[in-house]
Amino acid sequence: MNKDLLSQLSADDQPVASTLRSAAEDMQVSSAFQWDLETQLMEKYKAKSEPVQGWTTKIIPALGWVVLVVGIVVLLNQTIRSVAPPQPPAAGVTSVPDISFEAKVQGGNICEGPLALAHNFSVYLTNQDKTGFEMLDEQKTIGELRSFAWSPDGRQLAIVGNTTGRGNIYLTNSTGNLLQPVLTNSELGYLIGTSWSQDGKLLLMWSVQNNKVVYLLNANRIGFLERDLPVQIFETPQFTPGHESIMFYGADSSLGDGLLQTMLNSSRTTMISDLVEDEGSFAWSPDGLRLVYIEMDRSLGEANLVAYKVDTGDKVVIASIPIAKGSGSSIPSSANLSWSPDGKTLVFDFGKGMTDRAIYLVSADGMGLVKVADSAHAPAISADGKCLAFIRDKQVFLLDLTSVSATSTIGTPVLLADLPPGRSIAGFQLDKLQWRPGRP
Image 1 (tube, helix red, strand yellow):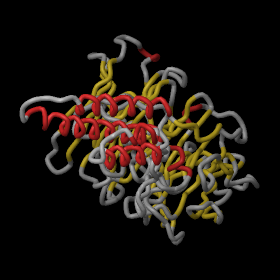
Image 2: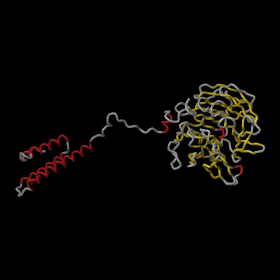
Image 3: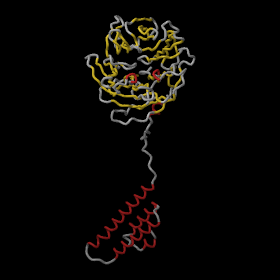
Image 4: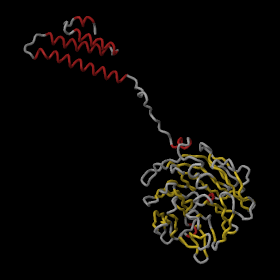
């Protein structure tokens, strides 16, 4: 405020006006603002100086000054807020940036442990940060890879291969650093696959050369048993809980073909379902209380996912997929049926060929069937249940499962890596992905 104008005010009004002048200077407000302030002050002062009558004329000037002062303070406060830089967070308080799903996977925060891959007769494990695959058998000692299977505790990976028609069995640790032969260049013929007992003490194998024989190997590599069966095996058998019997897709001369169960000691065989037609179309729950399998009901035009409860004997259809009636040999097939480790979800792929296959997630309680990927196969759920790995268009992808439900929108999968070339070209049906169970 101009000093000449200030001097024109009465002695009673000069302290207030002087205070406002100092505040304006401290706040470095614009000249235009100061000029407007001075004009309003002088007008108020002139109005106050005119002679008036009554007690109301005495209080009005004071109220005017109060209103003016309050308005100026509010205006200055708003000006300060508009030009002041943003304040840093208080000491001890830090903001946590969002971490992407891909970064969590590569940092080992979720989906821990290696992912094993079988492709083009070769076997691989993911590298430490899950940005690619490393071949386990660069020296080709395993021969032509046919199958692999993680032990239930995740400490060993059993690998089955063949050299000139003779089977080889190797075990390696969870990092793939130690490849140890168990059986090499055997007389068992061309070995097809292997599976573990639920306690991790037995390995089971079978040969296409004699598909009525299974071989039992102790995991400590002491003892090798051969069992002749009265049935034909069409896919790698799995142990039932308790290990007294095995289940497989096969054929019996009197029962027909379908999902069979055979006792290892007596060879007694029973039919579980004559509508099971595909490899990898049945799986035991982690707790061993439920068996789930896929039936191809051509008469109804449905592929049904059936859950069988061991304790009660109850069977219930928990999901269905329509199939074309009368499609004959072109009927779709199912494969790679498996459970999530918590026993709440199942996954499988379904379709006629590699390009028209789709991957489905199913709630074990029958509350939802979700298609999560088109033109994809070989699904596998990680040990923590947060990642779904699958193959599509010669690449391996990972999908975040933490927000997938029957009503949610499926997110965009993250590319893990391109498929490595392998030894030679094999059918996509031999592609396999499997996460290491648990922790080493």
